[in-house]
Every structure is written in C-alpha cells, then in structure tokens.
Image (cartoon, rainbow, N blue to C red; front, side, top):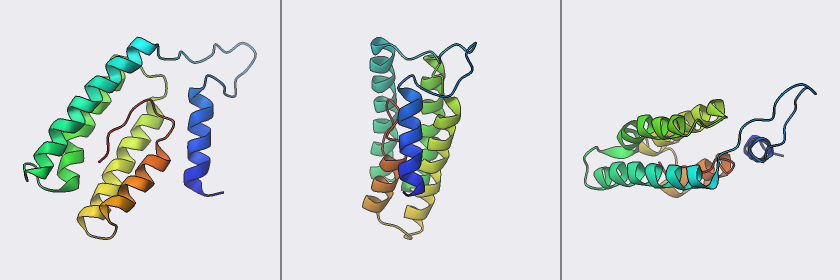
Length: 129
C-alpha cells in the first residue's frame, strides 16, 4: 500500500468521526452540512479567482496560483473551525510542492492533479492547484 493510499485511508477514517481516543476523550467535532456548503462555496470562489488569474498569466504559473489561494483556503477552514487543521496544512503544503514540480516541468498538470487529489480525498473540499 502506497503512502498516498494510506494517508487517504487515515484521513477518511478520522473525518468519519472515528479515531483513536481514550475513554474520557470527547469525539472530534464534525462539520455540519451548512458549514460544508459554506466552505465549498468560499473555497471554490478563492480557487476560481486564483486559477483564472493563472490562466491569464496574473499570477503566472501554478506556484503563484497556489500562493494566491492557500491563505484564503486556510482562512475559510478556520472560519468553520475545521477540527483537523494539521491535515489541512499538510494538504496546502502538498499543493505548493506539486505546483513547484509542475512549474519546473518535472510532472505534467494531469499528474499533479491525480497525485494531489489522491492525497486529499478525505478533506471536505479542496480546489485544484
């Protein structure tokens, strides 16, 4: 089993409300349907704005697009008090890492998307880099 697959399984497990805990530990708070809808809309708007800028070369490249969108994505997740901010920070760092590789022509845009979305499949919403 690859690292990406294992990471996806762990994220899905944690986000499903399961997880390792002590008998006295409270379960992690889950996002409500309304919060997920709000989060999706906000993250989509942020991603669309930065992606359209990248496509018109303002900012140029995937790295600039990710640097444009990551702060807004982080703020959107903080606004709904996402309980797994460590996972989110990992996903945002992965977006930047993949964008760097795509801008350097070390991987194709398609490879970047496949790798990214296989790693973040447990998050409620995440735009393409």
